[in-house]
Amino acid sequence: MLIARGRIIADGSATEIKAQAGSRTIRATLPRVDVASLGALPGVLRADRHGDAVILSCSDTDTALGALLGKFPGVVRDIEVQGQSLEEAFVELTADDPGHDRTSAGQDYGDTATGEKRPDDERHSPPV
Image 1 (cartoon, rainbow, N blue to C red):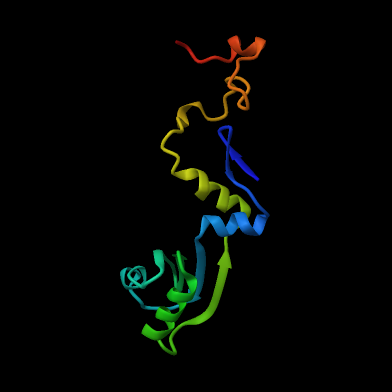
Image 2: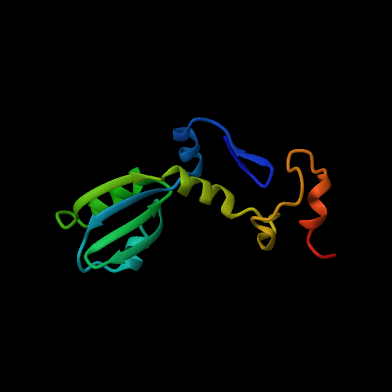
């Protein structure tokens, strides 16, 4: 179970939680190919290059890998498909929470389960 800001954001095994985050990564050696053309492949969310290595963040690795091999036959080497770590899944699942005030991160404002202030919360409360 993953809890962020007092709310359950995902429930299940680590494998199920990582699958909810959705993105997976393809890493491969692919020299002299434009990153923009890689980013335009179906199933690819973002493409980055590090020397001859490319890293494709994907919403659908099966589609992206098929398109990659189809567009660049015989050129792609050292292919790895990797899922996210639990930490990466947590970051992705909590990243787009519009109701979260990031300026108060890490501060204690009371019991997050009930929303009630504890007796010692006065010293932790933000200035009014």
